[in-house]
Length: 303
Image (tube, rainbow, N blue to C red; front, top):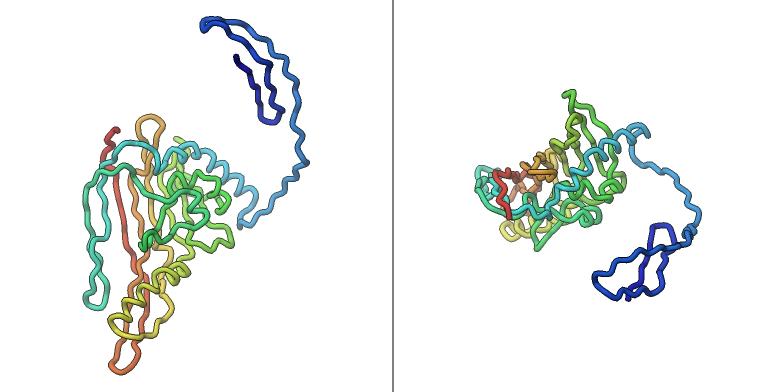
């Protein structure tokens, strides 16, 4: 015994009476007389409230560019099951102090990992921004395909078209909407207008100072005072916030799948210069230093 349920968005659902089918091989025709009953909705008023420093024409042009590459961006997912990727990765391995400045050695290695670029979920990025503390470790995220294709990205960023020196390339610029108080990203997604494909994304982190003051400065202060006693801390010195960010290069897999083929991300670390005199409190000047993480996909190993 069966019942048929007919449903369509915007209309009342309809269910048939009980139907009897005696044999598995039985085939029969059935005519359904379904009343059309639209679901009444309250009056909806749509108005535009723009907080972005762009004209309407710029926003329309930017959104058209965004829609043209949205299907591709939606496939560049860090959670997609692509198999394993053989990658060459560059990352800071050791930090040491010599001659009054911090120096960073870099370690290059080839590894096999299941995903190209680890990242937080789009919902996390919208709510908490592109930096956070995970298991006492400071982590900075990148605007990958998942993030760019999410509705929350449009809700928190202003878009604008950007001209390119190359005739067949155009840029889709983005920046956080006014009032965003978390670490966010601004930059340009460069698009091949002939192929309709994303090529490269350049971005910078924004609103870094409050995050560094809240999460990195206390740890630095504890370390300095453990070695030099009570000291006076100056305000954090950030010479050029725009140097912290990265570049992501997109690449096509077999079929219609895409991935981030190569990336370079520069995240801030907090170091210091200090003056310590016997019998008086020392003076410390915290400042930012760049840590670079990079990677390149060398081969795809099918699952």
